[in-house]
Length: 173
Image (cartoon, rainbow, N blue to C red; front, side, top):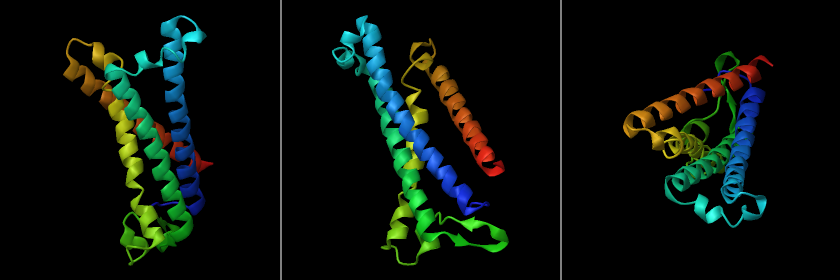
């Protein structure tokens, strides 16, 4: 249950989907710029890409890219469901239908299918957070288990904080 207006719910899902799409573009740009840096100039930007997509860096990059795309897709599906089947409940709150049965008893309805697609957003966010276990400090530390736990914990906390801040800005605007 989203305890807010339809406009706020649609705005939050639209912003999250756009930010996830931008994140996917940033991941691609990181690979191109990283390969150019390793080659020493921009002429090696495309030639050096195979070297950038190997090892744990490739796993982290793939997780970020897939996660960003799933997050954008899931938010777009949730936004469609909000438009198609939002139901007002007591006190002005809005039920966004976290389960398909909240919106339509017929599980084959298009609204129900759209809402079931929303877990893709959660999976995408999880993949993005998990990607940090494969790049950076987590891979270079002496105690990899401790470093990975700390990095993933910090990224998850930052994501919750940033998402909460975004929701607060949208709600108070």
